[in-house]
Length: 116
Image 1 (cartoon, rainbow, N blue to C red):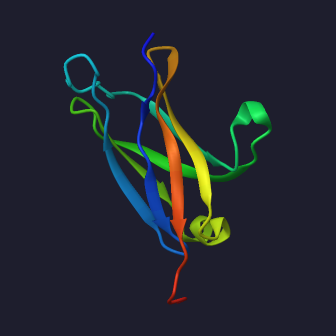
Image 2 (image 1 turned 60 degrees about the horizontal axis):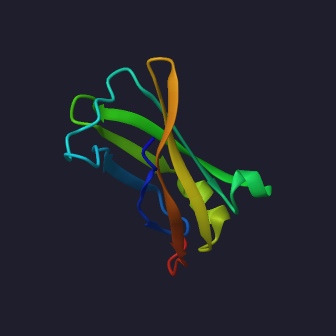
């Protein structure tokens, strides 16, 4: 079984963040068809197996199923609470009765200056 891909992101404390992500097969870079998929992503202070606490849940939606594109959004209220710290995340896809983690990494915060 293939391992999840790794990609790190940054966020700005207090901002709404939106990431567009394309899932591709490692072997040939073809898109993974996400049509009908349910996509979930959690942000934790540590890995779940090590007692990590969920600090935010990203809202994910398929943008282009055949093209393997989905969005991952973190609300400003969550990034404000996250406070510019570094966290772990992963993305799980449920499709055709199977669940698989396709992507994981760190999400590094940047402290805000302007506070609207």
